[in-house]
Image 1 (tube, rainbow, N blue to C red):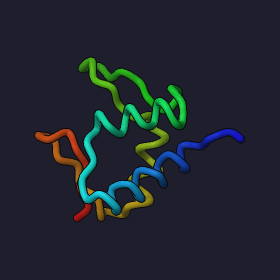
Image 2: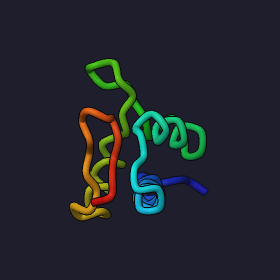
Image 3: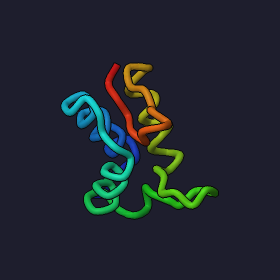
Length: 78
């Protein structure tokens, strides 16, 4: 079965809701190993990032209930 960006985003929302805070490095590592490399890329700053499709689905799903902490490189449930 092929994994979709929507499924990756659903996992992220569930994980953040459960843990409260998740770090980008942990999310990237999990997504790469459990969903596939196609959902991760290296951005212009040289950092691993989630694909645009995953980020778009993720934003739609959480509807403002999850915040990005730029300093801590993490997402948190609000």
